[in-house]
Length: 135
Length: 142
Image 1 (tube, rainbow over the protein chains, first blue to last red):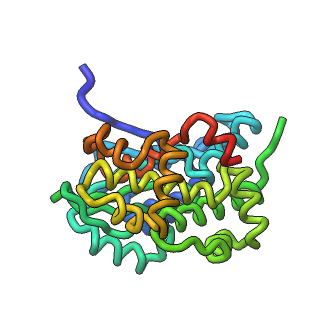
Image 2: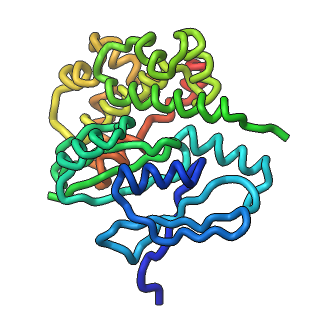
């Protein structure tokens, strides 16, 4: 029987740049950061929810041949790939914090709905991230 | 074999940013030069490359976004068709009705009769419920 979600993948163009965004700006923490040859196994997670990790993957060798990697990069930067939904207990305060930390790509400012308040951002590569505060 | 250069990645990303700007400001009059500026491009270059990357012109993208937003309001609210027309950025009820019918295949009021609220988050609806266009509408748009 499946018990939990453990790891999901977000496709990024550059793992170091992704760390700057997901950790320094968004406030996640590093899970694993292990380098072996050309590959870096890199995951981030929510500090208060460490059981679920996001694996930051980058197109290219050794995983992909160059043609496949190019296709992935094209899709990532069109916003056609990964998406995440995160929860917060104060989305308006987080909006201010993200701006202060230098996030500029807001697809939607904090907006109220009957189920709560949410906002949308994009990571530097084009991936969409929704952040929701339940009512 | 084809390759995607750093320039292409950067171009895609800039166009995506401009597309996001249109999605935020859909209710306002379209200022193509301002949107092109978000992508750091001239208007003409922006229009051409947007279409090459996203499959439709910026004008058509915005038009379909406005129609999608009107479909959401028709499903979710009791606002009049006239109010919804203005809510989403059309300035003429006649143009709105004609455009809606061309893209959706039925009038706004008939669409409202046929569709109730959708039980999915608002962001999902905005992303996923963009109308495809009535048969023939795609080729007309191109």
